[in-house]
Image (tube, rainbow, N blue to C red; front, side, top):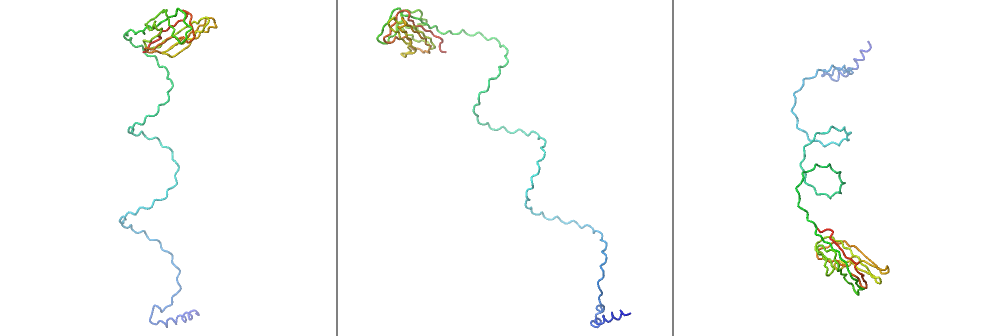
Length: 251
């Protein structure tokens, strides 16, 4: 066969080059095709558990996550324990007055009380007087005197000075009336402790002019009230009067 001589001739230089080395006496052939992988072997037996390692260091905190959706409201919890009483606060400003409440139901009639002591009646003080003769015309302011005294309860009207002198503190009423002459005016005042209080005027152009006035005033002990005729005035006769009385005394 023609192939055999060719292969022998190619291997001869190798044989002559390495006479003492039997491993190199043959030429290497081309690599073979890799074989098929074998079937995996069985799992080995579990090893013995090792010792627990030391605790690692705490890591850095992570970034906050996105806020989740608010959940449904849960049921109300039970009542907690009552807290301690707090300190008393400052007194606030007075509020506005409230509306008047409704009238309550009428209560039962109580037992009859004991009879009280008799009430003390206020003292009776009253006077009334008039003048029986003409007066004036006067050249200066002149106190009108009254010589006819009709009533003087309590003796507070002084018949000599024609002054009412207060003996009981209280509220009094005074009234006066004057009648002028045919040819002259009558002009007078009800006086209180030297001060003119209310005037009266009788104009002679009406024939016999008249004037009157009333005063209610509070007096205390030793106050004086009288009627005073003004300068150049004149009175006729007993149509001029002066009266007064105690309305009620001070409590």
